[in-house]
Amino acid sequence: MKKQVSGFIMLFLGTTLLPNVSSFLYSWALNGSDFKLTWILWVTLALTVLLFVFGILALLDKSSLAANLVILLGFSVFQGWMLWQNQMKPWIDAGELDMLDYSRIITLLVALIGLVSPFINTTEKPSTPSIDWQKKWRWAGVFFAILGLGLSVTIAVIVLSGEEFFFTTPFDAYLGIGIAFFFLLAILFGFKKPNAFITAPLLGLSFNFLTEYLWLEQILQKIGSQIGSQIGQDENTIVALKLIIGTLGIFASLFLVIATEKKKFDA
Image (cartoon, rainbow, N blue to C red; front, top):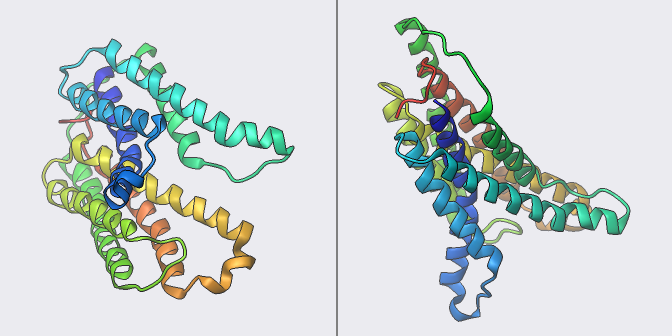
């Protein structure tokens, strides 16, 4: 049970880093030798791979708990350092609070929960199977996944068919296609047996869409009056869709996790 909780958390955290890694590879492919490589990018890439590999192994009950804790600790230290450099230190220097990086703050808290969870003693009670109860949660999860799939395809179409955007890039369309794929998997497997290999990545990508919206909203509130005329209706629609897609994905993945009913995440 403890390894499976760690595995779910690690797979979730690895997926939250995946858009950063994908953006790094996308920019590298576009700019080639002009793209500046930094150690932060390599650490992000390494953590993403480790979280994915050991998260999957943990869900299969084939990893060491000690290895999982070391990786989660490394992730926590990296996120904590990034928060200090990009948030706390600038706030102290400026003497005032600025925009919040919700993504790093929340993922740091989740990683800390992952570090503490193996040391919490819990008593597992035998569960009584209830097909009707289970089915209701599955149908709820599938319903939200269907809505999310439709909107994910919509955001990809809007981005790829648009001409000029201020914040949005073609990479946003690829992210829309990526989360649409996991929405589709959630729909297909949701009817039979939801599993953590689908729900954890879907939850991670949905979390990214939601925090991306929160970040853009803060930017618009800060400098919106200066660039308002440069933001078209399509881009406003994209920003709103990120909020909706993120919310739908979080509900879909959590409902499908609950639908497993058992005291562990089935693989």
